[in-house]
Length: 116
Image (cartoon, rainbow, N blue to C red; front, side):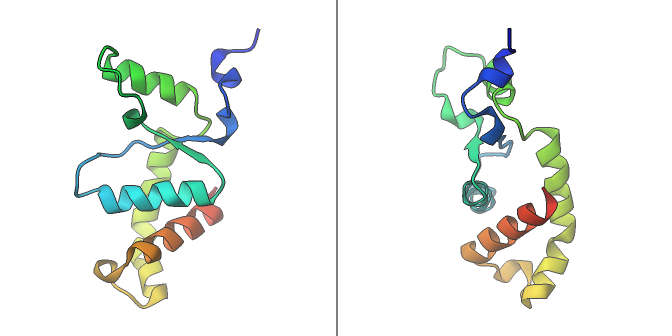
């Protein structure tokens, strides 16, 4: 009998996004969500389940179990992305402060293609 994780719909195309959901992270979260979709994957996060009867950690663990990518893997890659971001900005001849939403989408998309 296959495990529930593997039999979950679109397990191979799901990416768990673990990010703070406050205003400071909103532009980066939007760029990540767009880039993940642009690369042909489906973003999943704790915000998708609006059921207050469920314990938050149970919701998160259920979503993670339905995703092939995410968790620590995304965290480690995101840390590498942040380390490489100044160099990527220099390549665009911009400072990180000058990046537009479209610059961020392009940068995250290109970085994901090169590092996945």
